[in-house]
Length: 315
Ligand code: MN
Ligand code: MN
Image (cartoon, rainbow, N blue to C red; front, top):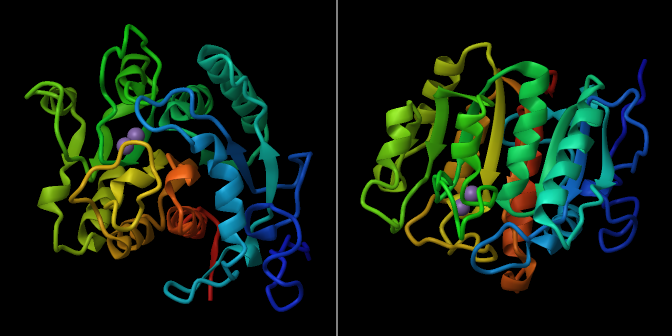
């Protein structure tokens, strides 16, 4: 009988002490025997407006000390059936975005040589491009659930082709994702041009603007997405700015009129049953998060994502 790693209980060691790992799980250096590897990608040099996401992983870990192992809403018991550890932060080069993206790609290639599901704490959204390069090298083009206020499909920003606002155009160009199985949920706000979103719709991206989701449960949309993806490998990328700034103010490019926290839970919970091969939670910026609520929300959404990974037991 495998002994699965457990988060340190708040009843055994006060929550404000102990290691600063995700949910105070054991830290791991080696990937052998792990089913899920949680890691930080502390980077903000791909962002276009407010910085600070380099501090995201540290603060998400700090707030995650509040989370208990059993999901009382869904019955999920991820620590009863999966071996999960925090493998620390990737050693990005904070003086070079290009080099950082190379480091992330090579780190993910090494991680994915093992039968492990990588779960990343950003970092700005530019981390997802090298992650998808590694994921697609292993699994082929993947379905993509992309929850975000922004479509992140610019061609260039200041002449740069790899930024947090160009990720999914590059992913489509490089054949890393299946365009017709790419779902962009929560997009809204203002555009550089009137056709900012429609071009990506022309590639086959399925877009669900926030204004069409206001005042609605997302359980049905999540179920539709789940049916449409079927058994394909799928990557889930969760930009915290998909939430309304009332729920998640601590982020680089906030947009009003966003999703609610209950909608985020409905959407993620509906993805149970998918063949999720990796996921990330990006754009938490602690300097703009004085209450800590954005990092707390990010930590909980990461927990909810872990709860819908393949192999999680239900109680
Ligand atoms: Mn984004
Ligand atoms: Mn965004």
